[in-house]
Image 1: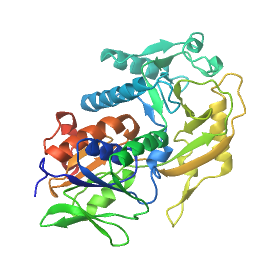
Image 2: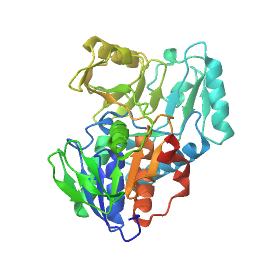
Image 3: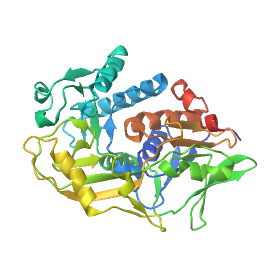
Image 4: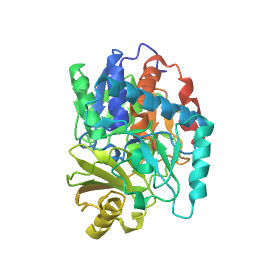
Length: 373
């Protein structure tokens, strides 16, 4: 059968921000929802995302528009309670490698050409918008985007799950590898690793970097360019940083509890993937990333890592999001994107609408899975 407005029971595979957000939006619309996670909530990319809310830099116009809608939904949530420690809008600061200031100028020109709020700063002016930053670390040109923000996704998932529980959603933790059940060509539910079946009128696959592997047995190919990445959470200290920073050697954002979240990609070659699917990295490399972050802050404080998580960062093969129903398997939908944080709220809203009504949303039209076929 095709998914029509009468379809009310939806099985959602994936306990990250896309799965949880869609599940809550489905419940708000009156659907019955079963949410299944391989282990626990936010156990994969959602638990190790820099979660910088933005649409900076160059990308396709449909992708930019969708990201701007995503930021808008976070602004609505922020306005309902600006005191939340886990969601803030204090701008974003970025610059290119020293000697590549023309890249910064080109990016600024591109951003201003489509009215993205973008301002050039020098070392002498940058502390006016980012007081905790060491001006000596800033090259001759940097960009400050005042409309950007950040979110701690594990805290957001906890917040959304309170509503999920209140609306009567069913949560299945430690379900292991979940598969989609297909009968007569249509998705009719899912099967957990223990063999338990969950019948449903529609299925959403939102498993981060594992999404292409889940739909591959259905005869659907989705390009996967997901690299291995790491997120480090520091020990608490009085850093004073408010803005997100994206620099050549460290990406840094504030984090609840007076900590910082650190990310980048220069250390990817130092990560070892083991036969059991786990990852490891030398402690001194983690400390090196913390040292790079310290160089960005006024006074070069002693930044100490407290914990770090390593795994695959979800990125579709062409970099663009993947949203929508599989034409080969009516009733089965996918949500797979690099920008899970920025798109988390709006993607859940739009996907819930498509799942329950069968009406494609125009903002998702260029992101359909079949483009990889």
